[in-house]
Image (cartoon, rainbow, N blue to C red; front, side, top):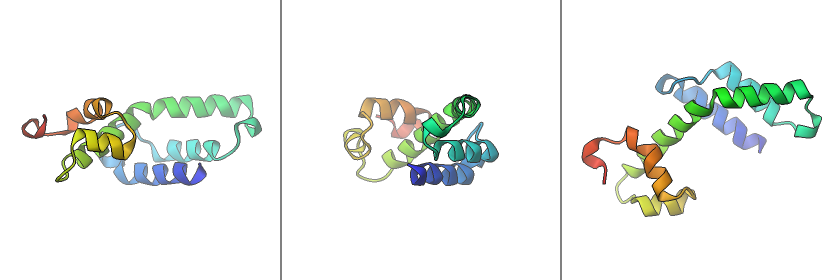
Length: 107
């Protein structure tokens, strides 16, 4: 889990210029909190983690949409195949990616 959080943090840092709301310092703090077992966190730390996760929710949704759009725009990647490959239902994936796909490429 910690490796996944770290990878997401590194991606967030690299893509901050392309998304809104992603503060690298806040993401680092969130990653640090999420790397620990929840039963070791104080109430204040859990509350802070919830606040930080909520702050990044819209930015994370945008990043996910951009990533899905990039996958879809690859040759040979259909919505059903994208759904199979990512585990995200293709209708959901399409809805998230739609704002980041040129209208000429949308189904």
